Length: 247
Image (cartoon, rainbow, N blue to C red; front, side, top):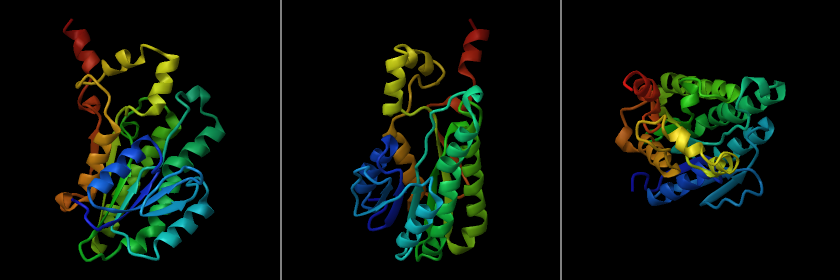
């Protein structure tokens, strides 16, 4: 029960990773404020519906939530459907930045009064991506995730005096329904992609959730400003290169 009784705000609660986060947070004993778009059907101890790509909705939701102290923020909302620079037009840039950086930054900053000076400290965990560390496609998404990593470090540096820790989980390819959609288009995609990972597989949503809860919990009380890859070894080294030179 790592977060027993803690009030935890989770964005993107209805997605593939968000669903696993909800289950893990309940198991950890948290009081969950589940946030997602209207009609998502999420359930929590509290439910706040808003579109994180809409700044006015985001600020209003944060103000509502911040009326009561917050112990943990897990900023999980995000995603992209544009893989290549060639297809990344202005609309795609603006959308991916708003969904993956601007919304999270606006929301977390608006929650700061509720996160500051908690008796046992508070924590913010941002779900970024290995795309924020190196390029694996999706240019605008990657830039936004790099931005949220920088934002988390800024919070860690400036808000530590108020007892707030801020860290990042950087998943590699996560086996969510989006990957099942890719498999429908490319039946051999898993065989090709998993050969890039030292562990020989994608990571699960549950593995991402466990990492986030660790960083949010008292077990990580001395950790702030860190980026934790949950990527089956992708960023540890270049396995295909080694396979080529040792063939």
